[in-house]
Image (cartoon, rainbow, N blue to C red; front, top):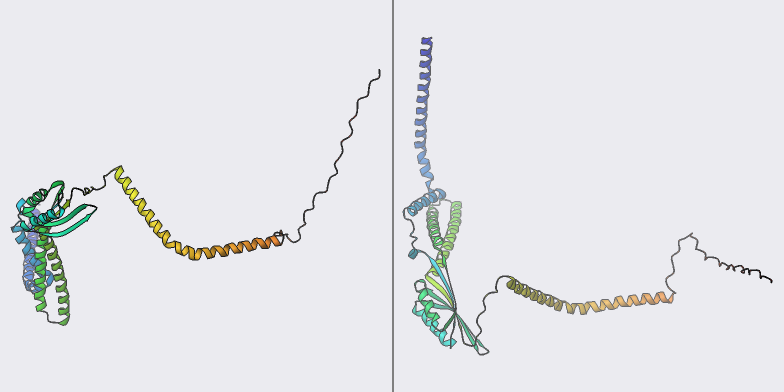
Length: 333
C-alpha cells in the first residue's frame, strides 16, 4: 500500500513538472512571435490614426505634467456692465464718456443718440480693458446723477483651457496630415489625403476663431452707458413677475392677435366685394324667380302615389234636435 502511494506521488509530480515546462515553452514562443511582429507595427506607425494617437498621448502627458494655473488673477473672466446716468447736457456727457474709454485704452463700439420733445438721450457701448473696468464704471457714474447700475461677470476659464487643448491636438493632426500628403505615392492617396487635410484645417480654423472671440471678450470688457437729460423719462425696467406681469403679457398678446385679425380682414375685404356681391346677387335673383314661378302656378302641387285612393271628405252630419222637454201636469184645484 505504501509503495502504491509512492508511485502515485511520483506520477503526479511528473505531470506537474511537465505542465510547468510546457507553459514556459509557450511563453517563450509568444515572446518570440511578439518580437518578430514588432517591425510590422513599426511599419504601420505612419498611419494617420496611429500617429494621431501617439501625438495626443504625448500632448496629454505634457498637459498632465503642467497643470493649468487657476488662481483668481489667472482666470479668464468676461465683465459686462450697464450704467444709467442723468446729466445736464447729453452731448457733452457723451463726449466725456468717449474720452474716458480712450484714456483707459479702449474705444467706443456703439453710439446711438436721439432728441425729441425737448428730451435728449444717448446710449453708448464702450470697450474697456478688463483691468480698468471698475475705474471706468466709477468715472462714468460721476458724469451726473447715477440712476441705475448693473454689473455681471462670466468665468470662461474652463472653456479657454479646453479650446487650448483642442487646438493643440488639432494642430498636430494637421501637421501629420501634411507630412503624409508629402509622402503620397498614388493619385487616390493624394486626393484622399488632400480632402482629409482640408477638413482638419477647417476644424482648426473654427477652434482658433472661437479662441480669438473669447480672448477679445476677456481682454476688453463691455460697458453700456445710457445718458438722460433732466426732461427725459427714466428707462422702465422689465415687466414685474407675478399676476401683473402675466396680465400685461396677456393684454399685449390680445392686442397683437386683434391687429393680425384686422390685417387679415383688410386683406380679404376687396376680394369679398369683388366676388361676394355678384355671387350674392345671382343667388338672390334665382330664389326670387323660383318664388314668382310657384306663385303663378298656384303653389306647388302635392305628390300623389299612383294607385292610392284620395281621402274622401267626411259626410255632413245632420244635427239631431233634442226632444221637447215634457212639462209637468198642472194640478187642478
